[in-house]
Length: 425
Image 1 (cartoon, rainbow, N blue to C red):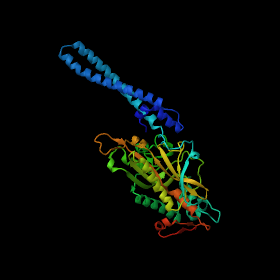
Image 2: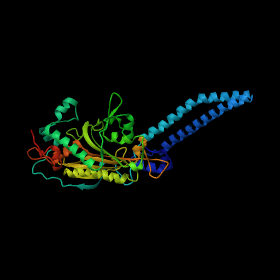
Image 3: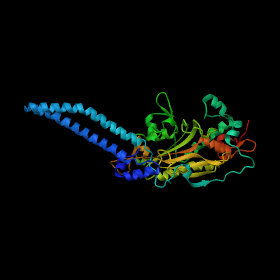
Image 4: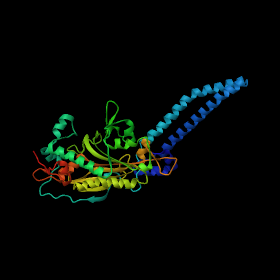
């Protein structure tokens, strides 16, 4: 959410930054709505004050025998009472119109975010690991996965497309990945949370999925939403709060199912585990001050990278351009893991700095140390560490063997009860 006061102070800067996002100027339209809202608010306050003043004057006029004045004052009060409900409605509607417009505008990009239209303009910041060499023709995970327990046909019969059922060793490997990631994040200083999977409108609005991306979510019959990511639940922990600066940063991690309708993904990644309606992800969320947010972003990204390195999975860090960033993000690093079967890098984590964009929507503030009065908006960050299904794909393809088995990465053997390979049935 944007602060109309900041737009008022520097409309040219706001429009310039929107232009970097590929959007047309909006400052003039927003300021016109704001001017009408403020004018109506002033008119309403003036009318309320005059009603109160005239009401008090009626008694004085009667006491002094000025009955004509009293009658005129009563007529004025009656007119004001008749007019006030419409004024209140007009002021309310104008405020809501401005709020609706502001809520639909994406976050402004940070200064160091590269200009670009789409993922082709993202910038590779760094890369890690050697791509594995194979003495046989490598395969994609969905072609050799069924012999290991990856069952798409049964899942489709139960639930339809974009679902998977995992059996036996591959299900255990999937579980081991999630548990390993969670343990690694806890060791990195994040507090484990088991959050709700169903949330209210306010929570999804707070993190920026509503109102613009409602079609990407699953809505329940009782008016709740299935979380598309644990970011929603974890970030809203500080909703409508005022924290002491000494309590910051807050760092949370959670392993949860995530649910996405993939409404805009028709025809994309229809095979395999890459794009599912239901998947598990280990999420990282940090809540901090504006001064500490950049360093927290680097810390979070390194936490996710360290898991990929421990698993021996080659990856690269990409700085997303203005045209590829998420709605609420001001700066995002994507971690892309190498998939030998596909012969390309694929996103496995996004670590995003949101600035105070989400905090404004959630009314989440902190009280700076040493300041008796005044509060500031918190800054929020979130990242995947990691998407479990995509990590499973990466392990399967990078550790596949000629006989169709998959070697278990050394870091996971303890979580697998000593099992070192998943053998085909």
